[in-house]
Structures are given as C-alpha cells and as structure tokens.
Length: 415
Image 1 (cartoon, rainbow, N blue to C red):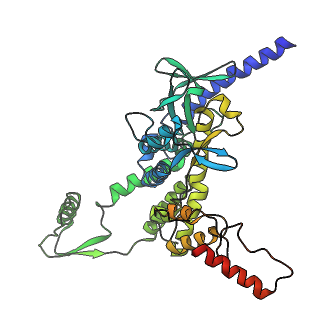
Image 2 (cartoon, helix red, strand yellow):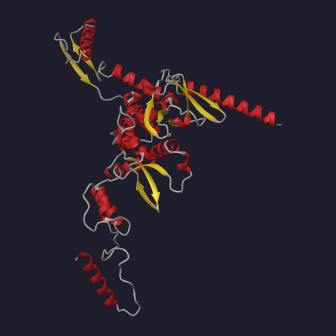
Image 3 (cartoon, rainbow, N blue to C red):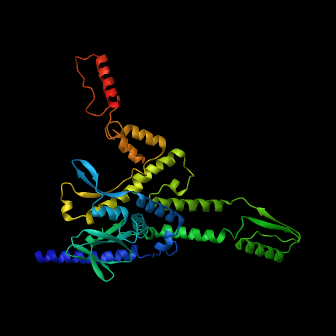
C-alpha cells in the first residue's frame, strides 16, 4: 500500500513539473498566435498605449508608496527603522538601485510578463543584505521533496531565497502574462493600431473635384497630394482648370471603427482594473465620479498588489523564529499619502479622527507640519480636554455645576 501511494505521489510530482514547464512555454513565452492573425508578444503588447498607461501608472504608484517594517508591541504599532530589512525595502535593495526603481521594475515585470523575480542575498547569519532583481527568462523550476528550486544561470536556487511576485497562476507556481493570456484582444488592438497608422495621414476624409482635368491628370494630382501628406507637407492641388478639395463628414463605418477602438481600450483597462478617467478618458466622467475613481483605484487596484508584495516579503525576508513570535516583524505599505484627497475631504477626515482617535501631532505629521506642545494628547469632543480628565457625572450635581466643572477643565487645559 505504501509503495502504491509513493508511486502515485511520484507520478503527481512528475506531472506537476512537466505541466509547469508546459504552462510557462504556452502562456509566458513572449509570443502567442491567436484568432486575430497578429503574433502577440510581451514586448509588442506592452507598447500598446492602453497597456502601457495602466502598467506604468500602477508600477509607479506602488513604487512611490512608503514601505516599511513594523512590529506590534503592547497593541501599539511601531516602525522598526533599524531592522536590516527596512533599509532594503524602503531605501535601497542593493548598491545599484533605489527602492523606487526596484519596485517600479518588479511591478512592470509582474504586470506584463506575469512574474517578477528577485534574489535574496544573505550573510552568514542568514540575514538579508541585498535584494537583486532577476530578469524573468523562462527559468526551469523543479520540485524535490516538496521544495521548489529555480535554475538560474546554471545554479539551482531554493524558492526561499527568491522573491517571486506573480499574477494569475494556474498551478500556484508560475504566473501567466496578462498580455499573452488575452492575446486575441491584444492582437485585435495591434491590428487596429496598424490600420490607423496606414490610413490616417495617407487618406483624406474627402475627395478632389476638378473642371478640365482628365482622369490621368486627376491621378497625378491625387498622387502628388498623397506624397505631400506622407512627407508632412501642405498639399497643393493642380492649377489646370478648377481643382478643389471637398471635405466629407465622418462616415458611419468610420464612426463605428472609432467606437470599436475605444471599446478595445476600455477592455484592456479593465484587465488591469484601471479607471478610465486616470487614462485621460473623460467621456463619461464628472468631477464627482472622477474623484470617486481615485478611491476605487486605491481600494481595488493598488491594495491587492500591495498585499501580494507584503505577504511574499513577510514569508521570505524574515527568519523562521519571527513567524512563530508573539510579536513578529512584518512589512506594510502606507497609503495615507495617496489617500489625502482634496482639502475639504481631508479636513472632514481629520475632524472625525481628532475625536478620541488621533492626536494633533499625528495629524500634523500627515500634513508634513512640525509638532506642537501638548499635541500628543488624545482629545475628546466638546470641551476638547484630554481623555481621563473629563468631569465625572454626579447625581448630586446640578446641570449648572456640571457645566461649570467642564468650563474649569477647559481653562486648566489651555492656561
């Protein structure tokens, strides 16, 4: 019975290895044939404007977020700037790049190729001292005794020494490229762009009419006009007879083409959950819903990617003892800066948070203002006195006496 289970398990492992290799070759090998007739590659797909825009924006927005190391001590969250991991993820992962450029490149690779890979370099005590990005080039992944190994530059590197950020995955190991996964849509968009490049600038939206020109002479005029447009020059119509350009309105077919092209752009933005207003598409946008899209963008687009990065870093950058500690170290992004919003919304938020939740200095810090004396006390609504010094209700006190106690407490606070 044991041998049977062993054979089944070995067959499963071997199948999983071959399946992973096959999956990567099919879905992430930078080229994919599809019904559109266009060969879609990650390189070609990432140059499509409606792909480049969300990928570039999401990558930069994740990279610009403050990323730090924290620890919970007595239910108080404390930033641990002295932890070695803090410098790597917040300042500089290695001597050749900044944290912004590192996370920018990692996110770009993840959003286009479906995988972002970085090598963790450790010292003799297994403490991370460097993080180096590795270009995703079809690494061979093997599984031995339940552990994954990546073959990189003829070396087998255990998965625990690699930060592997992945997009949608079918096997839990290798992410698939959203460009090749949606190859039909990308190919259709490539074909639209190719058609636009050929037609716009070489075919005018109208026709030439003339009195006194033969058909052959008309062809020469048309040929000269096309050459002038292609050369970026102002077209000149012939002088023999009366020759003029007749502007036409947009045809129904052209209108349908433009609508179809816009629909393709919207579908691609939807793949990345990117709000159209942030791609300068204000067709159905108002000030109110454009502002709301900012909040939706942070909540539904950036937050999932931030959680993916945090969990992978927590799993790989800290020791095993840290995982079982009662107060473990962990990484976390700070979204406060990107969620500031407009002045009125910010003022309302701070007004609410100041009522027994945040101190004046905590609020001033978010606004990059210096602290003020006695600004570290948590206040309550009403007389705005420190918690714990509010007047106690006494059934023997009259309403006027209680009001007088509140007034005296307020004066003691501000004198």
